[in-house]
Image (cartoon, rainbow, N blue to C red; front, side):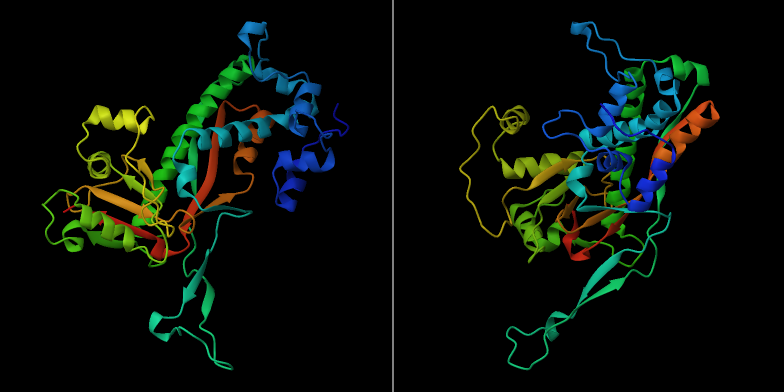
Length: 358
């Protein structure tokens, strides 16, 4: 049973604390130890709002108009939109494999922070007593990171949306979230390759430069290994490939296998070759991702390599999706805008490289 009365300014108070509405509810109305429900879920239950149908048990989700019954139930609607959108963006996308950290901001402009090391020639292998240590300077980026709106709008009469089942609305939100995450991935890949506007485009490498004996248009083993070693002292733990490059990488890693055998092996239906482990991680546990947004380079298939631990920072404008859904339920408009205001910056440029299979 919820003990706190809900009011609209809770969103403002949560924003001032730099936390989500759900976190704020847990702070002011904490769940009891062992409770299976979050504070937000308890308030949904108190307002008799069922968000999901369970056909086998004869349980039918409430209509969206359940969020309109009381002033307290109205407060829950924006957070329901926000949670459903965020969950869908993570569940069906390669986005989580590309982002090292997420920073929430309270404006639409952001300058990221970089660590600028001294040139290698100035670094000392050993520092004698009273000598100066090599320096790594933390600086603010010259140009701000661009924030974009990712999402779409549902255009329908106010009454039509009110009479829709909540789980049907959730299906539409999840579909929007999936497309928004795909759009964000496209933007991330552009930042990996071309930088975030602060002169930090990825180092561009070529198959035949890394292996002069490579066959034109075919990724060679030497070139692939040399590409991974180019990340030292970091580790290329993530490869993003387009269709042609993905097939070449898989055939290189598992030679002598046809396409169906490769698929069977990757699904776990066949034992993989003996694994040799190198503790530095150059060749172990590489995540291979497919994206149609990897454009050819000079009409050649391309691979983007990153060390996902240090490469991409996601910047999210706090409460952007909440404000729009709150406006819909308050003003009774005919367009429900579901989106996330976000941008991406590159933290350590040496952790991103591209490989052109020339």
